[in-house]
Length: 489
Image 1 (cartoon, rainbow, N blue to C red):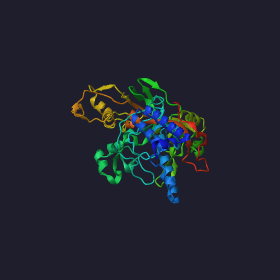
Image 2: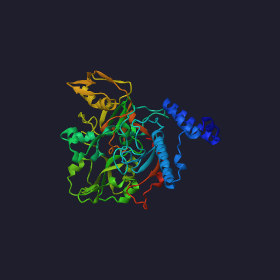
Image 3: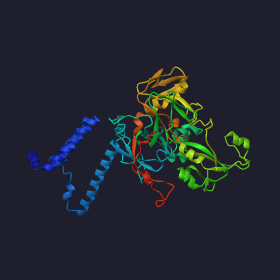
């Protein structure tokens, strides 16, 4: 059949479908900024108009089993391509795995994450299985092929990351992962191993295989953006200051408190009414049995109690609950209970050096941190003073994120083998923190989030499950379904 015959036999419906796909392809090509995508128009032209390639050859087969099988294959392939396209450029599903954003977003919340909010990131590792971040479900193994690796590029979106936006991003320190301890930061593991990273890499029995993951295949995290590019952030006594100006705590932010009672054991119902998760007030004893996170202070040294702000009354030392995360509203509610003597915000003691930068002993804590300048694209840092600190603070940015060789030798910085007096950053960076301020591994621990790690913004809670409850006893949090996930500060 000649081309003229094929065109004459094309129905109006086929022409309409071809026109729809052609226009969509042109618009998508303009958005992405790639003329190569226009070649898809030839593909759609052959499917709907010329039909030189027998794309649906299996429909004419006399073998019913073969036709049925190919119908399934065709449907699955279409679904996978559609999911890959939607997941890459528009909407991605994300489940809240930890309590770092309580009570703004809860453990068990399932979120729709908009890629359009900050502009979708073009694929960096394009050959990957849809809906699998880095590991194949059920069968295990990598869900992506490492090559090719495309350069970072972000398409035009609806806006940019602003202060107090909740952001989903790829975990920056997740470039290197110990497969037996994937929930642990490789760099923290290396810091506390006597032999450093070499000790972690050599101990396969404990840590498993050590793997590298590309930017877009790293674990997804969600935090609130506190510091923007070019700003200086500092925490003083648990309060955040941006360029010296106090930044109020998010309304639903939590901090750890001690609850001092008259000896009363706080019932589970009281914690439940307050909204405290069971895991936040119960620990496991040596036999694996759940026990309250509390201590009877009968016979305790009064001077030691006073040293942490607990005061006996009429010879009664009472009982203390410790490390209980509470919002300001929850604290106010607790103080109305007649058996509660006091609710005291806990302070972290200095000496736990697992805060950023890990290779430099700043003495910073979760409550007193910085000042630390956040790198901005096009701005320059000069290595003229505090060279050791600057090298520790910005080495990851210069080496891991922007792809340069970096070394500090004899008090001098070497970048790509040459002595460097200064460095100009290629990316914007952000400082992320959790609303659960005392229970969040965030930028205070692993540093800045580069712009190429930003995934999107949560816009909708479409499902919420309470892990402490059964399916017939409040498992589904019905009141949270289809709620706006853009929780303001």
